[in-house]
Image (cartoon, rainbow, N blue to C red; front, side):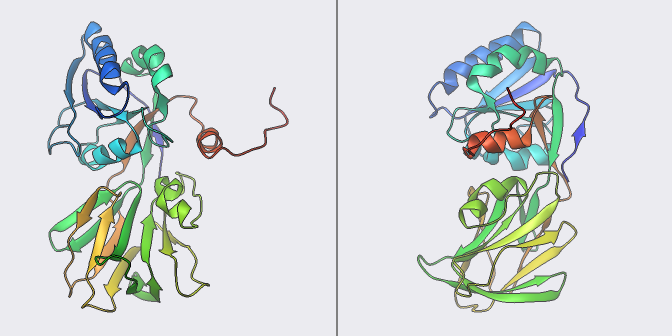
Length: 285
């Protein structure tokens, strides 16, 4: 479940920049100079996913790009428990909540520790005995063959749920409820909810709808047609290999991702703005 904790001044700061985003390299130079001016050690990379161990011993990591860039750093950040500062140079920016216009003015206060830490739930997906990965948004299971449907049996803590015949399944965190699963008709889930949602993609049974599971559940997916190979996509970034005789398991990860947010951060303000909801609060000026 997401939670808020006290923050500390930053002494060592890593940067990850998506150089393909307009203005990102220039913003990196500006922010890095600000950090150096107050004696903060920095390092920077344009590789993503970032190299293993890149965030070791860092106090925070500033990601300059879009949500895809942010997602590419999330697993490594979680392993080392390094808070992420997301600066949006992309489009929607649900995760990269700081705009490039505001970050320059408030960056000095962030470096001094004037922010809140919000811990987000992740999923752990295991496809083999020694093969697992973290997902901040979602785990998607589809057929490895283009335009083929899947036939899969789903179990929740060994209790049979149903057999899905569909284009695939989306297992989502609350954070990921504004991503792929939203497009597939899934629910919006508050990030503090600490639940796992399962949404079938174009199910053949029209009554198959999203299911919300408690965070303690272990979800197991068995391929009902072993001759049809499945592909497992983690956050739309990485694919996990599967074995015919081994089920896919999805559960809440044992670690949460720390995200740096403004002290006055409002989840619903972000939702209203990013999803362009109409209507305003009558009490607002």
